[in-house]
Image (cartoon, rainbow, N blue to C red):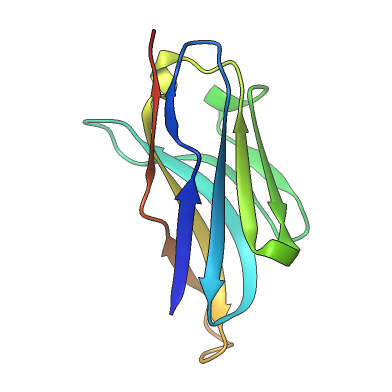
Length: 122
């Protein structure tokens, strides 16, 4: 089994900052891409940012220049530094990782965290 556990969400005023963390644990053999997605009420889940195992990053246009994704491969952890937050960033943020397990090393599967609420409001 693999678990992704997120932390760092909360309430912040417009223009403020938050840092999300997501730690993967369990019977992990290898972690490939990791990323963050978000889902606002009444909307579909959307990509926020992704990072490969070698550090290549990709961002949604709406967060470029404000958010930074990073990862610590030794800790199996991905981070999302969010600056200059706007009310439209309010959503549940989900961590995602593509992982192969010790049990099935040849099969890459998507794993998701439980989500963490980010609310940007004055």
